[in-house]
Structure formats: structure tokens, C-alpha cells
Image: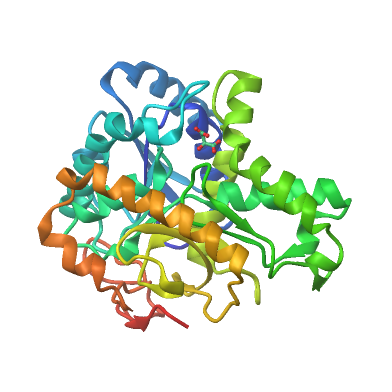
Length: 366
Ligand code: LMR
């Protein structure tokens, strides 16, 4: 049996986590042979509800669930963690944009970045889900000087999965037959779902899908899907977000299927001319616990215009939270060319898995 992985989840009793923690405990995220320790973090006033979740987890008698611990602060909850899923934040309501949450949630992520820096495993992999996810990930990363910016990611897999689901429904194919589609930029209404490299049954997507439909209906639908769900059910997406979290972390850890791209919000290293140091969704491939930006894709005029819009929004968001971005970490974020993150999970005693070397230096760009 493998040694258990420690997984911290903030907002652990909320809507997304209510699906997510059961998926993790059942092995959906890390595989059927990987035990987990769940370090569940909630606000003090939500601890009773969290205790209810913990009881239900216990009652499932999952063979892979090693331990559950409950915490009312991130400093304690992040001790020794290999993965941190930052979900807890104020959600938006009907009529709000995700960026309206910037000032409400920014402080949460600067505290959590500091706590990860001080208490997490040095090789921790971080996924930010709380909105606005890209800029919150940037705040967390900029407040963690001991960690590499490459260890911080934001969730755009939800948008990526939405693209596949909506396309599958429109074309009548199975979602698994659609490949190499991805999302650029911000998890906001400016995100750009790019189908121009996509394939259906390994044939060019645009030989099978009408370009006018793509531009006038598909793009706005994906961009506004989160808001559409809030209006329909009175609260933001939960089960689909939980599935996207599982997909993001599983692919990052176990690897993407050969030849396939996925979307991840990561600190920009300037690839495709994107402003360095913002958290931007790129097409990536993952292997050996590392991600690499897919390089060399053609960006036509339409795509460049769309990419510029979402890039500008992220630069503006960075400006708004500049007070929470310490100067100390500016250099490391603006000059990210080599990923020094090991890609190998280290344990508290500094050892990695038996068969792998503890450190692996890698160029993040293919
Ligand atoms: C989503 O995209 O469903 C979530 O980010 C929630 C939201 O506010 O849209």
C-alpha cells in the first residue's frame, strides 16, 4: 500500500466540497491504490455542518480514506499537505460578475498563500477554485515566497469541460470523441474557448461545426454558463465544479492522455506573448506530475483579438489587488522560464516515493 497523501480542502462543507470530498475518498482523484488523509478546513461557524460531512464520510467506510481532520484555520489545516484545494470564498449571486468578488475574497487568499508557505509540504500542488480564481491564485502564489509559482494553478477545467459537453450535445457525438479544444485566459466572461485546433473523431473540428455558430452562440454560451446556472438553480455550480477539480488534479498528478490538451490557469511565462506573471489559462499537457504549455499552436487574428481582451482584464485585476502582491515575489513571477518544482511528492521527512528521485529539474516549456 502507498503512503497516504494529505489533501487540504477549504470551504469543506460548501456545495462544491459536498460532492468533491466523496470523490476523493473513493479514489476518483488519485487512483484506486492511493490512500488519502483529508484535512478539512471551514469557518468556525460552519464547523457543525462540517462535522456532519465528516460523519457521512466515515459512514461510507472508504478503504482509501486513512484519516479525516477538521480545522477552523488554514495555518493548522495546511500542515504537511501535498495538495491544497482552495474552494472556500464568498460566491457570487445573480447579476454579479466574478470580479465583483475581488475585494471580498482577496484577503482570504493572501492569508492562505502565507499559510501554505509556512506549513504545507514544500512540494504542495495548489488549485484555486474560489472566484475570481485566476487572480486569487496569483495573490496566494505571490504571498508564498518559499514555493515556486508553478505550484499554484487556477481552475479553468470547468470551462474546458463545458466546451466539450456543449459541443457533444450540439454535434451528437460522445464528449470523449472531441479533442484538443481548450480555453485561454481568465475564468470570467472574457475567457476565450478556442476550437480552432479541435478535432472530432480525429478530423478537424471546423470541417464538422459551423464557424458562425461557434462565434455567435458557442463562445458567449461558455463564457456565461456559470451565470446561467446561478439563475436556473439559485446557486452556483457545484457538482460540475467538483468534477472539474477532480479532472484538473488527476491529470496534473497522473498525466493527460497521450496527445490530448487540457486547460489550466497557470502563471504566465510569456508564452504566446502573454503578459508574464499573471495567472492565465493555457493549453497544457501533463506528465510525471508536471505540466507543460503546448507550444507552437497557430494563433490567427480572431484568436489574438479574443486573447488580448482576456489578457487585459487579468492585467487590470492584478492592478486592483497590487497592495496584496509583495515586491519580494515580483521577480520570481515575472521571470518564470524554468520550472524548479520537483514534480515528485515529498513527505515530511524530505523523502520521496521509493522508486523516483526526490528532485527533478525540468524546463516547463516543451
Ligand atoms: C462557475 O463558473 O460556475 C463558477 O465559477 C461559479 C460562478 O460564479 O460562475
